[in-house]
Length: 235
Ligand code: SF4
Ligand code: SF4
Image 1 (spheres, rainbow, N blue to C red):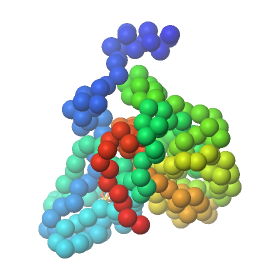
Image 2 (cartoon, rainbow, N blue to C red; image 1 turned 30 degrees about the vertical axis):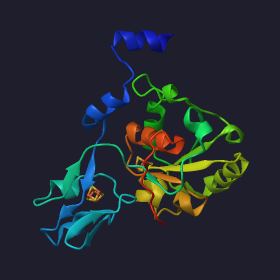
Image 3 (tube, helix red, strand yellow; image 1 turned 90 degrees about the horizontal axis):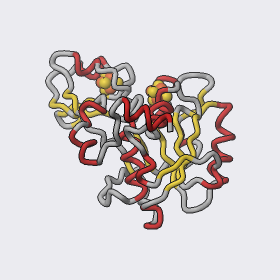
């Protein structure tokens, strides 16, 4: 009730999918976009080695990009795009009964707190993921989707594998954030075993450091099959 009253006081309201689209530039930090190569040295500015040249274009490995903007601030620099359709599917959506109901278990495998915070925002009145029938569950035994943030630390690897085994079929794993996809800025730490995909099979990847809540919500929609056309990432 307190949340409801506070929402009224601040005039907060849940966004419709159309409003999300029209206002996504304010709700997304954006990310670099492939750019015609004008400066052969541009790739050297990237601290995470996410830039690579391919047939006259400078392309981005989004599993490594931390959106630091260094490549964008340089002249000539990388283009910058808004939007939030960043999810990359590696498996088909769940069967049709999951279009209106999804139980989600979140595991922090070693993140810095920011990716986890963006996931928590989804339960706020602005994003209100409950309108899609999505709910967080405390137990993997009830979960349809396992969301994992952060690189997998030595101390969390066993717990992550056990949680994955405990989930009923059919199930999907969503890796959220650059650290979960590649180890990110923590990849060389002695406490890190590697990205999530080295511990358990990943079905959908959400790049970003951290990804905005809309990008994560979009990933859930893809898993539910609400968005019928989804990009399949090979490999
Ligand atoms: S935004 Fe930063 S991390 Fe991403 S490609 Fe550019 S320089 Fe690299
Ligand atoms: S991807 Fe970025 S925001 Fe997410 S856990 Fe790693 S460092 Fe933190």
